Image: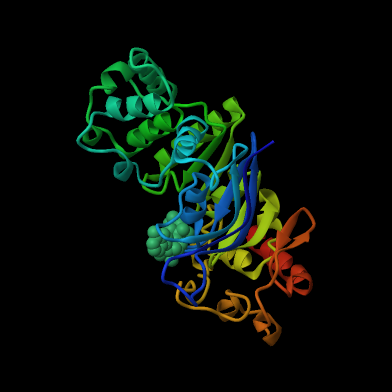
Length: 332
Ligand SMILES: Nc1ncnc2c1ncn2[C@@H]1O[C@H](COP(=O)(O)OP(=O)(O)OP(=O)(O)O)[C@@H](O)[C@H]1O
Ligand SMILES: [Mg+2]
């Protein structure tokens, strides 16, 4: 069963008449037990997509399309039901734990508040909070309840935030760049914790990351986003072996490899499209070495292609070249 289904979602910000929407016709899904990556440059719309899974859109935004989270139509739910869905069925892990936790409250208060919101009786909450902190690897969990956020390292605080995200019985975890604020060794620990939890509970995980290599390593499937659109979706393994969209291929060339020499990295040329810029055709065309006049004829539809989908009118003719270059990169 899908624990997240986003179908044809377009989100346009208030006052941005004429400008491009923040999200355009985004469709994606996450099944129970599945780890799904959402990859793209800064500003491509990843966080807005994540928040729609919780039924939240920027204030005043107009919304088209549907989002079903754990079977519920989030835009049609009364506020109380939506709060219940968020606290009981969905776990949200934000990018920066320090921004998520109130520094004026003890760590225990943060976790207990999440438990209370998920319907745990007051008398049981401290024991449950202790057990949750223990389950995410916090040492001396009972004492940790009385400590302050500033006494925790970034990695430990991210574990606290993950514990709070597990306060209900989440069927869906949404992790918005959960390890970006952490140093590399801690990143790996926090990530494997998230993956273990997902596997143990049979939950689905939507994992947002800038890091294509990480997505390919830990995800079952991944979506690549550019300027508010999904431009490619693939089983994670074939993202590296045979990228189908020139943007994905560009991201791969910009991804540092643990084995390749550093000077082989090539940034994707140009800069991401601003929200106030509207192009007649493909948003990536101005940065794409393969662009032709046909690319300006209209936004390219996302078409099924093998086990994935790609939004590039030249995808078919470019496939052999993109695949060959990906193999050359991997071979180094
Ligand atoms: N509440 C808001 N009001 C106005 N603009 C917004 C709001 N939320 C997002 N945006 C704009 O929508 C676009 C997409 O933002 P989003 O935060 O989803 O990007 P992202 O892919 O998560 O980027 P990053 O990798 O930097 O986190 C950006 O141009 C951003 O400035
Ligand atoms: Mg973001």
